Length: 68
Image 1 (cartoon, rainbow, N blue to C red):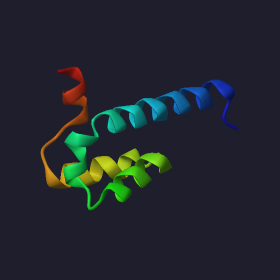
Image 2 (cartoon, one colour):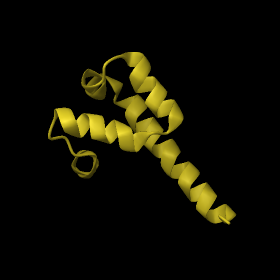
Image 3 (tube, one colour):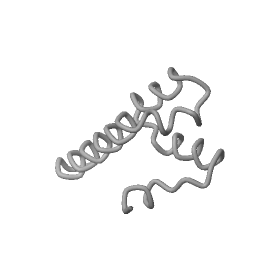
Image 4 (cartoon, rainbow, N blue to C red):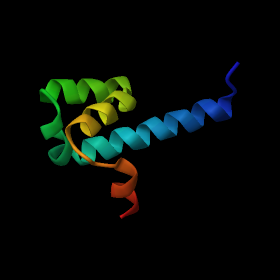
């Protein structure tokens, strides 16, 4: 059973990622088939799939972007 602390941590992490992708939509939207696809993936919290799509179409690294 997942404890409350782990659940809250995961919720915060997903919120942070959603805010990141929403705030940088102009940069990332070009890698997706449509705005609807982009927004649906964010709404679903499917950030792994988003990263796969971006990585398949570029050499972008989210970690490098954040650290620089």
